[in-house]
Length: 366
Image 1 (cartoon, one colour):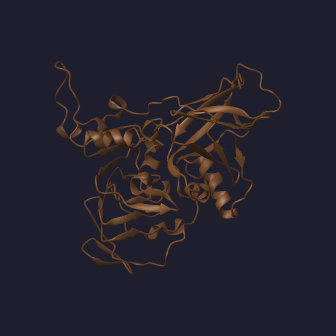
Image 2 (tube, rainbow, N blue to C red):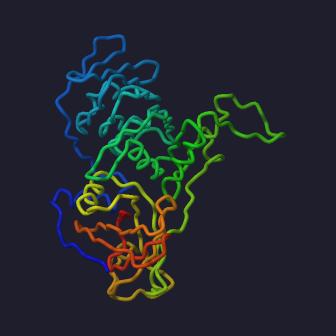
């Protein structure tokens, strides 16, 4: 039986959660000023720049930015982006040392010629603004290192999770280069739809015997010809309406997606003694071929509320299935967290009933 918690979260959290639920994969159309510390860049010469009060140093040469030191690249003030040493350069590449723990908001924002980002899987990316408004079809080279883990309550959030959260959006036509085929498979299949355009470093274009072979060696890689050698973006249906509550006017779908800190903070507050598994965005659309009942609340073709509870069946990812394991869903919408216990006995699915289906959900178990 579903238990509904009418506990309204703090105003700031509620606003953040609403943002995550509705525009997880999007960038706000309005610039937000990042609260940056009063740090000053010094420039002694020879291309070197040092950030006072930190161990961060930067060298700029040959259209490349090299970031060294330990700690994080701090958030940048949107209204003072000109203070970044690389702001007015024609940099095409960024190399971030493995000792850099985090890349702050707006760090490399609005660098239209920046195409190559070299970094490690141990580095957090704060949010989408870090590499927004850079070159179209940027290439991220991800070098494998043990991930950092930040605990949000009892929920682990890793540096690789923060990277996947950006990769899953397919924003700006980006591609991702990993160390090995195994790393490619794990990275690409971590979401549903799968992450588009993921390759491994030694991969070459497979030529046909009669194909022209005069392409320069540095171009003989699939990520330089994404239009021809694209991959990923494969959708597997994982959500449907239960036959116990048929609803011809509705179409159900779900995506396995990584959520940001604000959403995880809300889940952590209600997870109890359960263990976090994965997050999903469930979307219920109206069926254009069927007359929509007047009682359905529809926003831009998305059904936000139905008059009666309808049962939905969500597929549990294979890696979390064990006989006898108990699952539940935590659903977020409008600053309210709803808890749904599993209504079926199938170890591969979770069935839940709700009137407000289109939301972000966390799958948890014990």
